[in-house]
Length: 277
Image 1 (cartoon, rainbow, N blue to C red):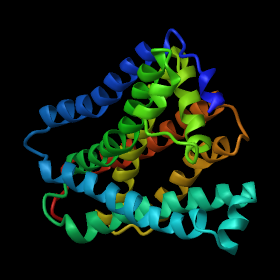
Image 2: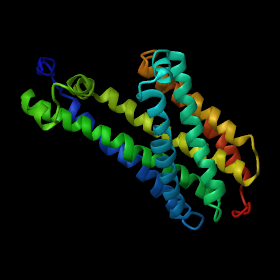
Image 3: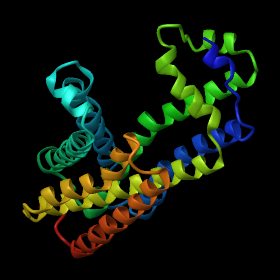
Image 4: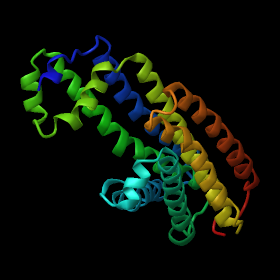
């Protein structure tokens, strides 16, 4: 596997990855500690757990099941979607918006019927966005760090053996190894900012869905779905090589700001409302 023998780990790769791992852990933990400390009487930990479970079921079980049928498995539908950028982007943003927002709606309306305070809606959002960081993003960053450390020793053969990379899996593993090798402080900053924006987005979208549930406003669920789809449009295009990474971050910042503005207005309108409605 000669392609791995030329892998050179950048001087900043390992420290940048270590800092990234630390910061993406700190982000959800800090949000939780701050919000729980400020609103201890109005919040229940069960809402944090519900948000985490809601993400895992909607995004990591149901949505991934749809991806297996429509993206991973070899069939006419998957071949069409994978072979057409517009179809790939539309499919991806639609699945993310529908599964995650409908998951929020179902849990907040039918499962979490007690203590539906606006503060608990925010806590739910922290749980939803926080578990995405800790269960999906963090393991990927730790894997990159492990790869960078192993290849930094200069012995590609032992690194491949430790990572269980064989001739059969080499082609699939090479992009990850190259990504770990080229990771730097700029990528660290983009990854940390991206996670912060994503967490804010999840909090804002949860507040929007929550407002629709407690005020019987049917427009809120489709609004949340569309906003989620818009947020994910450029990230999906980036996966196809359609836009640069910096454009994705700018786009994410714009839509996170839009979502948080709407959510803040709805959150303020619930001041003093009956939490069990």
